[in-house]
Every structure is written in structure tokens, then in C-alpha cells.
Length: 327
Ligand code: ADP
Ligand code: NA
Image 1 (tube, rainbow, N blue to C red):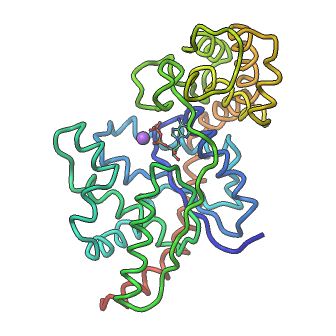
Image 2 (cartoon, helix red, strand yellow; image 1 turned 90 degrees about the vertical axis):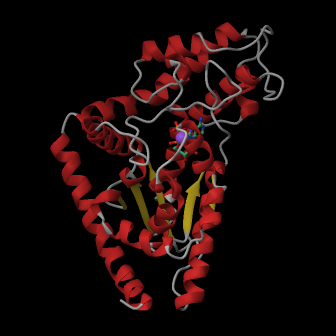
């Protein structure tokens, strides 16, 4: 109903997990019907801020494309593209980087987490949020779906829109966050941490291509507690509450309804119910991913088409930016 343009990006980590789906991709799909213009980018320029195997990166880009399509991203209504195929992202990032002070970036979460993990980080990792700002502003985007962990990065994009406008005249709209209302899906092995791709424990994460047997096994082995009744209390009972959240999310009902269905079941039986609901929800997605990833040529053509459409929007914006900067 409202005007505006949505932009969001996801790293090419291969097939997404259930947390990515429920926390981000599901809302990406519904935003397609709420905004007249929607762009989703597979952000491979961001991915190389960490070491990558080049053959695997290529596979992961196409697997992410297949997954987004299978989840319901419509490549006709949305512009689905690979970031590096639109070189304007890198060029605008440079220009915005020249408007960003070093201290402004030092405390942002990506740098603080990832640079610590590897003793020292690259310049690319340090300016990662500047590239994010460029991604958003390049399309004069107005709305950006983000997780809570990305709010500070979006604030940089807002600051840079303001800084640019002050220096060169009103041009960029200030993009607004569309915060995900879904709570974080937790690790099945350690419900105090979120479900994550980088979790070394294989049993902790449900991936969208997991077989029904794998899903049942992972949920059956998930960590709960010694109370057999099913209740929702994330502070005291994070494990079973995580299952209730997953159940409600995949079944499309409220937490209260999910707890109601669990009445009279012990956690063992409830796990089976949750697993069945997850399997039911993910089966068509898994089948679509498998089908789509079997035709790389088709995926490559789709991404090339998306990049062409993205460039049509980006080129005039960057042309005006160049002009204003004095090139
Ligand atoms: P990961 O931690 O697996 O690397 P990312 O950080 O790449 O995931 O996140 C990609 C998107 O998925 C982001 O929008 C993020 O907020 C969302 N997301 C990631 N993990 C979860 C989770 N466990 N629950 C809900 N949303 C998640
Ligand atoms: Na992450």
C-alpha cells in the first residue's frame, strides 16, 4: 500500500538455515506485496571480507539464489541480483568512505566481532558497513529489513545520507529500518545462543535442505530440560521455548496456540509434533531448492537479468553523485 523502495542483502553462505528463513527471508517474501519496488542482493563483495574458497563461493552464490527463489522471492516483481555484478556498489562505497571518519567505524559490531576472531582484520572488513550504506543508498532505498544486530549499521547509512546531503545538497532519502518482529531462533544444542551457520555443531542447526529424517533427528536430540510439561518461558526454559517458537512460526500460529496444542504431551512427544510441522513447512522449499540448483545456467541467467535491472536503477543515481562530487 505504501510507497518506497525496499533493499536488503544476504551473504552467499550457501543454503540458509531455519533461523535465516524465519528471521529474515519469510518477511522478505511478504514485503514483495507491500512495496512497489524491492531489491534483494546476494552480497558477495561482503563475503570476501572473510577468507573464501573460490570454487565454494561460486557454488554458494547459486545455492543462495536457488534458496531465495524456493522461499518465494519472485524474480519478476523483485530485483534479485549478485552484488559484484553491479560495480556501482563499489564505486559509491568509495565515495561514502571518503565521508566517513575512522572512529565512526571502530565500534560497529561486525568489526568488533570478526576482527577479534582473526587477530587483525582487513580494510574491507573495517569498511564493511560503508559498503552496506552504499548498497542501500545506491537505489535511494527507503526501507531496509534488518535484524537487531544490524541496527547500528543502518544508522551509519542514515548518517551517511545526511552527511552527503549536507555536503552536496539534498539527494538521498534517509532509509528506515524494518525490524523483524520474529524472535531469534536458538541453537538446538545450546539454546542460550542463536542458531547460526557458523555453529560447528552440526546437530544445532536445521538447514533448508535437510531431509525429513535429519530434521526429526535434530529436533528429537535438541536440548530441553527435566520438566516434561510444555510451557513457554524463554528465560527459565530456553530449550523448550525455542521449540514452541519454531512450532508457532512454521505452523503460522501464536505461541499460545502452540502451547495449547502441546497440552497433555510430554516434551518427547512434543518434539515429534514440532518436527512434523517443520518437515511439512520445509518439504516444498527443499524440493524447489534441489530442482533449481540442478540448473546452474538458469540461475546464472536469472542473476544476470537481475543485475541488468539493478544497474538501470543504479546508473542514474551514481551519475548524479559523480556530478555533485565534482567529477
Ligand atoms: P548466520 O549467523 O547464520 O551467519 P547471518 O548473520 O548471515 O546468519 O544472518 C542472515 C539473516 O538471517 C539476518 O537478517 C539475520 O538477522 C537472520 N538470522 C540469522 N540467524 C538467525 C536466527 N537464529 N534467528 C532469526 N534470524 C536469524
Ligand atoms: Na553472522
